[in-house]
Image (tube, rainbow, N blue to C red; front, top):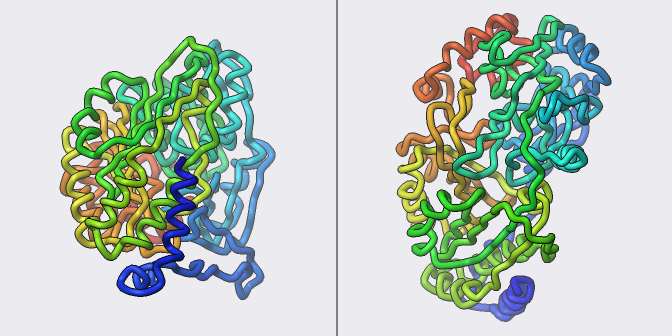
Length: 468
């Protein structure tokens, strides 16, 4: 249904050949952003992140085949040494003029301790699902996409949604950390507990996580439901839905007064295949709505309600690892903050008002999730549960408004930034948000006194001068 509506919108767009609508349509279509050269002046190959907003030309590229190789490389490779997983972070965590390391060869399940899996940190989340399912087990929760490596997901506090479900790092029961001096530390809640609480969310600033012992849960089938309804109805029901469902999230769509809601609940019902995803067609419909009617907010909202309010609900039943994550082929840039739960919905209203007042070019939905508390020192969820608000900008569009228009609202409501998503905070602001900020910095100084793992972005983030 969404595909047919997107096609209708495309046909309608072709009809608009003059007047305000035609001018708007013509000025909204933008070319591909310019790409950096594939090779720099010194012959070094380009590395670029998924959205294209960050890049660098590493002097050395490393793919260790063992934990020992990884540890030795941290000691001897040209600094700064940075590790890359899927490259899905939007912040400059990875760019380096030194050594770029991938852990793709350190992947898979290395062993078991009861229902806890010993997993190599280079394992992609999408590959871990079927590997655990062979044992009748699963990760308790998954993020919106599953392309990330386990180490990268932990390092940035990547999360899914569910008031009783923590971020991925909260399921770590032990980890092995290769450090800048070539050593490997095995730590958990009893052995090196300060390193454990610091390293679970550390953005690769303490060393390279090589292995993680993960708690798992039974591999259950989940019943997925997706439906569209008016914004005010979703906001009125959101708290009750978070309380009632294993997983609940929703997407507030600017300039439509509509929300897409998604729930997942455990079930013993037989599997029911999902229909082909309509997410891309939905985004295309929203983009064409912007192009065709963006010059008039009332017209845009009226058209959205007429075209999208009647979208049929979708359902599917399958194992959780097959349903909780989705494909995201349409590129974007993203800012996400984690707020006290009572501030989440009021902040959303302010964000929507600001965008609808000032930024008619925005068409991506805004994602809202809930995450349980944990104890990791730099976890945005340390000290209490949080509600996340994620704002996206099409990769061809200017995303500076995320900093000037949206971020002040999220900060005023007590938000902490997602470590892998766009934000402008530096050491002074972050220290005020994290009770164990200085404890983390002390562990970092102890494990990497020369700052071999710090690129310029991380030095600014942690307030570390060159050489330390």
